[in-house]
Image (cartoon, rainbow, N blue to C red; front, side, top):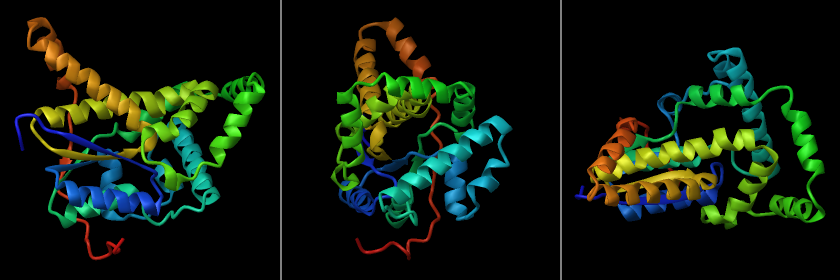
Amino acid sequence: MSAQGTITIVPSVHFSPTHRRRVRSTIRETEPDVVAVELDERRYDRLEERSGRSPLELARELPPATAAAYTVLQAIQRTVVRLYGLDPGQTDMEAAVETAAELELDVALIDDPIAETLSALADRVGPELLPKLVARTQRMGPGQQAQQLDLLTTSFEEITSGEDVQPAIEQMRLLLPELTEVMIDRRDRSMGRRLHALRREGHDVVAVVGAGHHLGIKRTLEDLETRDRESEALESAAAETRNVDADAVVPIRSPTRSVTRIPIE
């Protein structure tokens, strides 16, 4: 640990073998104090338990509206994984946790609780969303429609930063702003605040996050760093910064996952 920690972000595609290798090599080469992952306590515990429960079984634990949103998101994710021929057997988050266990590093859980995210999503998504989506799609010009087709041909293996997926995020923001605010923007701000809290404590961190969150988290970290610098001269700003950091609670776990099944990649 140092007086001011560092953040190394690894933008990743969750089910890509190429990105799992990148996650492992970055953690091993960087030798951080902490590995941060895009998980909350509930999802981390299930990962550690290797429960293998189906999305339908997990959805039964949630309120009806939240469970419906969760089931739809799971269906979309499975469709995308199969469409692009990705490996659903292991995610980049599992690779990060296993590598942390291999190196005896703690894991920081920086994502919002899944129940809160899905509850917010259920509040935004209703029967009127589909007609809105159809109307927005019809208003797209030929150029935007061509761009949308181009996005479908992008190879996940070529993604190395948030810039590579930003066009897709902007398309999502155009067609489904309700989902983008909940699933992307809000979580970017939360994960950025938690990473900033770790950095202020002096931790050198490797953060493994979905590529779609890369730029939003980076902007949040830059904004908070600027606010910290200003707070050195303005006491009122310092008080505001402390208030911002006060809600950035970061659960820390010591992973217990076996590392015997880590493949040589």
